[in-house]
Length: 496
Ligand code: BES
Ligand code: MN
Ligand code: ZN
Image 1 (cartoon, rainbow, N blue to C red):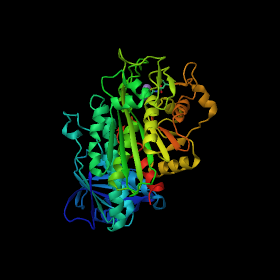
Image 2: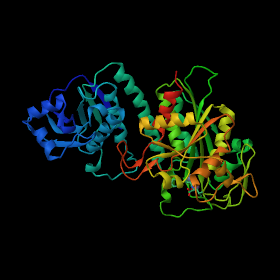
Image 3: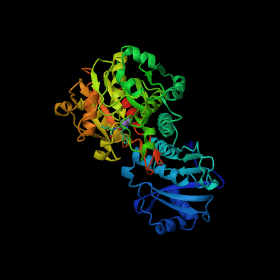
Image 4: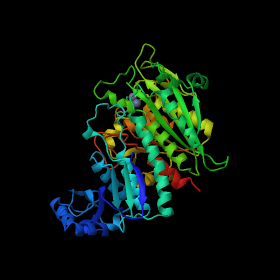
């Protein structure tokens, strides 16, 4: 991720890359107009040649422009001034980073004077940070031309003072959380498995997060037969990790509980998945990744809220010791479950993790995130995560947080008619319903493990944690979906 700097005024001497801004109808910013004059109209000429329309994030690029003291000038669109909010500023920053990341330039100066100052400047920088994140750990033969070069972005004319510094500090904490999540999601399953996931979170303690780990023996004593049934086919022992941040300074504030599905690899188990695309199931811990990244963000920015993140970590493998279709397991709260399909394992992990977390932390609100069903991708594609919720107020809070940061949510129905579909002939419930409404019956299953009085939302993020093509704020690959959503949900609703 690139570094960010804030400068009062333009630097003397030749710089690598300079960005100036313009709105629709090539409405040049003051800095853009200066550059245009110094280059004898080369900026406006380039804008015309590139059919530059000033749309937010659109770019006209000039290489080695005569008369200007930069190697490369980017005229970047801001869209209409009236619509330039935090999200648009982030998109602009993302576009700049995407264009320059492997351009050969190491440093870019962005002159935002008069256009995108104060907190908006910090959001532009945030967009550049998020978009510049890459995972090159295992690429040992990258050609020089493919290597990222951009290391730093300096904002010129963004202003100083609390608006910038406080916003920047908060956004840097959030970017750190997003980066943590993306790395967890990207790492392969031979690197990230339940024990190594827990080990990777150890450094959260330095941010003030209190960590608790349950091992398999403890989970057995607690009666977590559903979670352990999934884990029993793997040589990798299961874990539950709880991460607690109490920024309220009080002991009587009930926490917000975040629970994540952390299936570090999902083969389907004995109900084995087909081979095509199975490698994607390394990111079946995306819910757990988002919860962990959100805890990082919340702690790093010293939130005044009381938040607990709990992740249920298992690997779902076929094996001589794996559970079989038809097996009946008993969850921690004593309910029995007929395992019709061992590939519907996420709900089996969540039900025990959620029950233990509710018993242990007595939350007022619980939000779970899970890459739970392929069916949610059929319903919503890759634009919205599905939200299932037992409380209209909570649903509204989550929706608002999601649209504010661009992690969008679409509410889906739940109710008794769907609940009946998972009744079993032999046990209290079965772990799958009919094919139709597959995401909804999955949510109904989880709903059976929500304690009375707890406001609860289940976010099915299966379509959101991994992207097959680049977006405004991410490259293809791990998106970090959910971190900004949860952070915003907490800051808007649970801070003093
Ligand atoms: N992890 C998968 C869901 C998934 C599928 C996430 C594709 C991302 C992309 C989950 O454990 C699963 O296998 N669900 C089954 C449920 C079915 C057996 C009722 C599914 O969606 O097919
Ligand atoms: Mn599965
Ligand atoms: Zn799964």
